[in-house]
Image (cartoon, rainbow, N blue to C red; front, side):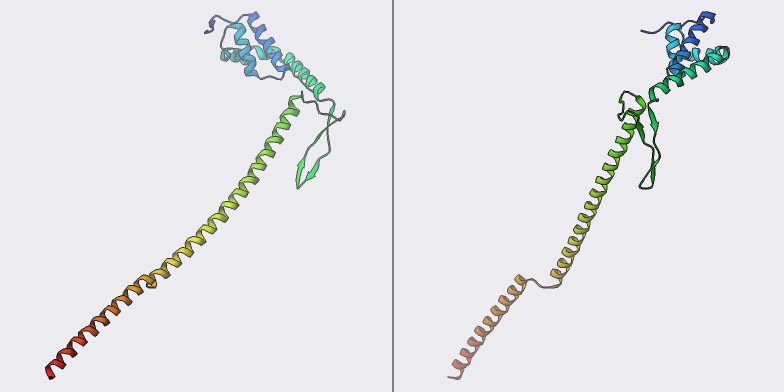
Amino acid sequence: MARAIRNDSWTQDNDKVLADTVLMHIRDGSTQLAAFESAAECLQRTSAACGFRWNSEVRKRYESEIKQSKIQRQSLKAEKIGKYSAAKTILAEGTELFVTVSKEQEITQSINETDYLDQIIKLAQDQKIQLVNMAKQIKTLNEQLRQQEMKIERLKRELDEAKAQPSELTVNEDYQTLLQILQRARQIGAIEEGFRRKASV
């Protein structure tokens, strides 16, 4: 359902609702865009109108509250990660890796930062495995291609040699033809000899 948009001027109560919403999002570590969208729902205005009102009029009246909200946000964040300490940089294969070590010797998976880091590490490991497998496949394909090229060259040589030499079938046919010619020549010679003998009698 489309939200009704108010076009009247901003009141002090409107500004207070907008400011409280933005400050709450700052403390929670959210974004201004999310704050403006939330305020727009409450005030029945567009998020763009809320953003313009905040930046042009309201923000400068709440500078101290903004600073306090940021301090509260840092405090909340520090409480979440307070039991963790940054370990000393470790050199591994020429790459510096920063390892976070729990003081209680366990990692609490509920912390978003730790979950995100684990996901990044797993993604990098998966991509490394994929790259290694792809490299192996490429090497195998190149070897198969090289063998196929060698086979093609060998077949071409055999074909050229076969074209250069008469086939066994052709030799046999020529031999049979030659025998037939000789046989006919003998027959003709025998007939002529018979005629000569008759003529001399």
